[in-house]
Image (cartoon, rainbow, N blue to C red; front, side):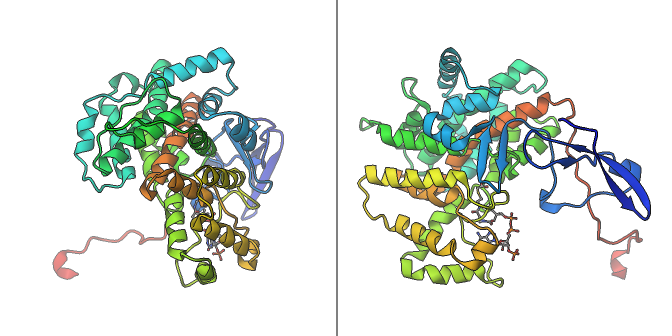
Length: 431
Ligand code: CMC
C-alpha cells in the first residue's frame, strides 16, 4: 500500500473528516474508511460491494474497462497460450513463475497427493445417486477436515502449505468421484504418470473394462479451461472463502464455503445455466424471443453467460474460450455444432442490441466453456464442479495471503437497519 499523503474530506452537517487515500500499483485509488465510524459515528453503505475494497492483495488484477486480467502481472491470454495450469498455480501461490527445478518439484508434490483417504469413499456412498456433484463436493471437501487433522492448524505455516497442496491435488479426484458416483460407475484412481488435466479426464471417463487413452488435444483444452478459471480476485466465492477464514476456520471448511457460493447461477453455476439456455433456444430463429425476454423488466430471465460486475468491455477469458471452442469441436470432427452456431448468433445479435450495448453486457467466460465441456463428453452438472477444481488454487492463494496479512481481522459488516425500534413483548393471548 503506497501514498498516504493525500486525504479525502467528508463533510457531515458542517463537520469535516479527513480520510487517507491509498494508491494501488494499478486500479483506482482507495479511500480508507476503517476509522470513519469511530470518528464520525456513521457507516458507509454498499450492498453488493460495488465500490468497496475489502482487502489488500497482490495476486490478481482486473481492468474491467480495458478487458485486462493479470495474474501476478502476467496477462491471462499469454498464460493461456504459453503456460499451463500447474505453472499458473505455482505463480498464483508463490508470486513468481517457477524455475524448471521448482516446477518439477511442485508438479511432483501435487501429483503425489492426488489420492484421497480410502475411508472417504464411504462418505460418497452416503449421498443419493442423483445428487448434484456440487452438493457432493461441498460435503466431501468440508469433510476433509475430518480426515486430514495434520493440516488444519492455520497458525502453522507448514500445515497451511500441506493443506494447499492437498486441496489442489485432491480436488480433481473428488470432482471425478462425485461424477462417477452419480452415474453408478466405479471410482477411477489417479495415476502418477499423467499430467493434471489428463489425469482428471481419465478419472472421469475411464472404466475398468476398457483401456482409456487421453487425447493430448483434449487434455490441452481441459488444461486451458482450468487455467482460464484459476483466479479472479475478490469475486463472490473468493470473498466467501476470505470471510469464512477471517474467523480462523480451517482451510477445508473455508474452501467448502467457496464451493457452495460458486454454485449459484449468477457465479460459477452460469456455465450450466448457459448451456441449458442454448438448448432451450434450440434454433437460431428463436434467439429474438429470448433477447426480448432478457430485456423485459417484468421477466426474471437473463441471458446466461452475459454480463459481468467488473468487465464492461469484454471478458478476456471469453475470447480465449471462444477460440478453444472452435479448436475442440474441429478436433472432435463436430462440424456445425448447433449449440455453437446458436451461441455465435446470439452473441452477434446481442452485442449490436442497444440494451446490451448501453448496459455494457458482453459474453463472459461461461458463455463458451459449456460448449467445449459438452463436446468433451461432460454432462452439464459437471460444468460447475470443473470450475470449482480450477478455482481452488485462487481460493487457496487468497486464503494464504489473507492469513499472512498483519491487518487481518474477522470480517464483520455493519448494516442499515430499517426494522422496528424497541417495543415490549406482547403475550400470545393479546396478539
Ligand atoms: N441479461 C440481461 N440483462 C442483464 C444481464 C443479463 N445477463 N446482466 C445484467 N443485466 C442488466 C440488469 O438487469 C441491470 O439492468 P438495470 O440497470 O436496468 O436494472 C443491469 O444489466 C446491471 O446488472 P446488475 O445485475 O446490476 O449487474 P451486476 O454487476 O450486479 O451483475 C452478473 C453481474 C454477472 C451477476 C449479471 O450480469 C448476470 O446475472 N449475468 C448472468 C449470469 C452470468 O453469466 N454469470 C457469470 C458471471 S462470469 C463468471 C463468474 O463470475 O463466475
